[in-house]
Image (cartoon, rainbow, N blue to C red; front, side, top):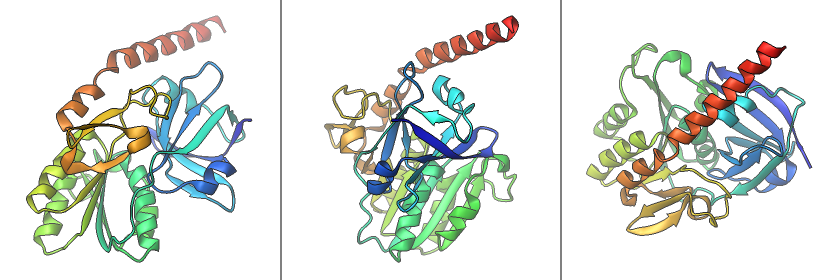
Amino acid sequence: MSYKILTKKVLNPQIFLMEIEAPLVARRAEPGQFIVLRIDEFGERVPFTIADFDRERGTVTIIVQAVGKTTQELSKYEEGDLILDFAGPLGVPTELEGRKKVAVVGGGLGTAIAYPQAKKLHSMGADVTVITGFRDKDLIILEDELKAVSNKLIITTDDGSNGLQGFVTDRLKEQIEAGEKFDTVIAIGPLMMMRAVCNLTKEYDIPTVVSMNPVMIDGTGMCGGCRVIVDGQIKFACVDGPDFDGHKVDWQLALNRSQMFKKHETEAKEEHTCRMGRGNNNA
């Protein structure tokens, strides 16, 4: 069975959205879960968080940043093209019941993961403040979509090119000190950003949920590649997470492990680029 790309939309020069026809996945998908896809029989297994889903249409939306070998290859696929494998939903859905006033904090591509959380919370009647951060205004994604599912949307950029300069932690601290009484903060983005958010919220004793997305291979917990340490115990992000109590995550270990495969990914990317170059020369 193959899975058809129904919609492709470029969100910024690095990031694109794909809506995939996958009715069985859409039927059971919930915010916080992910899928593992394989482009073709020679491709690697790559996880992507479910950015949105439509049960009636039988579709699942993923948002992809073209940075590595597989994501660059996927960026060449167009509407109507087929993906070989699309397995899911995997992972534990985010626990959102009972949350009344929530700050959802997204950094960069993490904004795509934050969107379904905010959407579900908003539909449940929670008061939702969304804070997102990007390097500059040209990289901002999902602004209109986030406006529709939040009571307050704050977008900040590192360079201030959108009129508001600073990090997401700056904006979150401003909200807290202005009197906002968040019962939960949900932080999704780069490890350094999530750690910074947790350091801040710990000062104010605000429960904080983070989405850990380490290297995942089989998506079943069998390989052990996605292990993280939470409250001194080994957890596997693909089956125990990806959401965890951010105040209990061993951040230094997570940061160290995130660097383990950088060399391999760089080599694979360079080899893929070289093959493309040779192919063009032979054309």
